[in-house]
Amino acid sequence: MSRFAANLSMLFTEVPFLARFARARAAGFTAVEYLFPYDWPAEQIAAELESNGLTQVLFNLPPGDWQAGERGIACLPDRVDEFRAGVEQGVAYARVLGNTQLNCLAGLQPAELDDELAWSTLEANVQYAADRFADAGLTLCLEAINSRVDMPGFMLDTTDKVMALIEAVDADNVRLQYDIYHMQIMEGDLIRSMECLLPWIGHIQFADNPGRHEPGTGEINFSNVFAALDRLDYQGWVSAEYRPTAVTEDSLAWFPVKS
Image: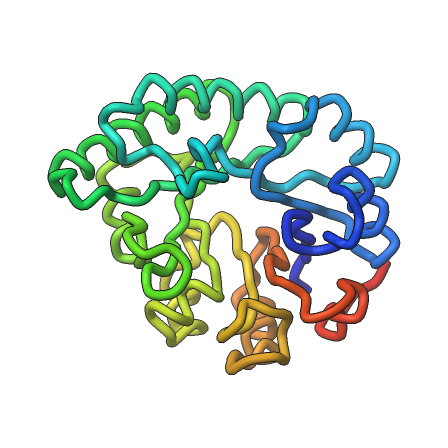
């Protein structure tokens, strides 16, 4: 059966961030992720993980100025030094929090930025991160995010683009982060797609579409999707990354295991 994690940037937001760990554990989750940990000391987050018996499974590398609308800086040629500093910060947090995977957001490509320069910058930055992560015993994930609804201009918006980047970098520790919500919007054919991409998938996230709410609020047949992941013997984490329509605990009818 799939191993489910809770994304604390979207779930249990009824309480402050550090109080969400206990809420997730009380709801039956044994693992968590979130977008970014950098606003809190790593040791403080680690204490919440330990006291609640939770496993940290993922977070993102620093994205630039998120509040100002930046969604990653890996494709920006004038931000390479900042990207590399962010890699070091991510590695430092992972050492304390215990997770072995971090996600790299490619970023929004400015209209004036040449396509070839944006791609070569992204490739070089991912290569740098992959090499640094290999030294640290970490896996680098790359995520395709839909450019139709949520992030117009996001550079990696299809699995084909992510796979082309993985092939170009050619590192054993680079994997595809497959987001069911984003790929339903961009590509559809979810089960067949995941079956074909399974050898490269390192992490899965989900929300229903449209709306990015909990399973059962949209068009995706999650019973079939979760059953397919079990049939495929997917061994990674499957993370709930949706916006609950009401109190988070009331959105968990899909959750098959409460331990």
